[in-house]
Image 1 (cartoon, one colour):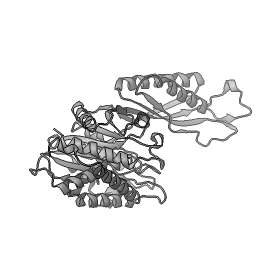
Image 2: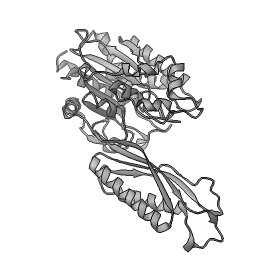
Image 3: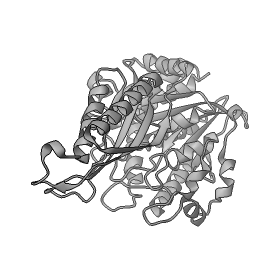
Image 4: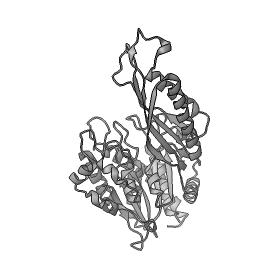
Length: 420
């Protein structure tokens, strides 16, 4: 197809693709661990059911399909000359607990719909197109994230195989029970020469595109993140008899640190700080808290901004603990550098958006994505698609429209058809 011809498809054709994507998302949502809510965690029966459904749709679209030893579902739409390197796309098909039905899934279903269209046209490319349904990204069941994409990138940390779920089942045992061999996980790895690049289509999970009135946007970088688990040990006492001046209140110390995080992370573009968990174990209304535990999550597109904020927060926490007479224990639970999207792929995405007469918006991603792991072996890019409901995600209120799915499919198709 010529460059001119790639833009002559009727709007109704892509409208049909948009409707197909939305219908598939609804159907895939039936595979859930918990009736009445969207929860699909790694290697559960619902997870296997979703994998089988994705494999079926890939095969019907004209792809060769396999599952690797991490449980990833991979469909290959062969090149005009078989055996050529591949442009990879895809996203994850696991979810958070009580989450939405488009987070991750859009990035798998949309390319399948586009491949189905190309296959019906008899169209092939000088490169193969591979769609990866990454088996695990969210880290819900075994407290380890990006497992599927890390396996493909060759950066899977084998120590997490000993992590256990809430029922005490290890990841190693769960893999074996599912018919996978943990000893063969490294066989999932791709060599850099086998991939020409990686493009992930994903809902924005935020309100930027919604407020801008834009259906899609080009991601400039994926923010790096530093996370900590914090424990504050003070002295419990009777709420009515311990004088204010003599208290070693663990909760108030934790709250002061949390408020500092909020203050420190304001005013720097792309920098955010969150205390997402805050607990007083065994607390009571009439007891001065003797212990508090909370989490810290600091992210930024620029690693230096994040590192500076982390250093300031840790120093402020030390000062608060000393002044209030409490003991502080901090454990770093996650550290990931920012990942810039490849400029050449950003430019090609931008060209596709402009060819289609759409407004061009560039924005960073504050959330982590599978593209972060794939960056170890390939240039990566991301296409964000507008969310509704104020950009809510990781929630049953997560939503998007068939019209935006159709627009994103058209942008994705144009990108692939002009890819070089």
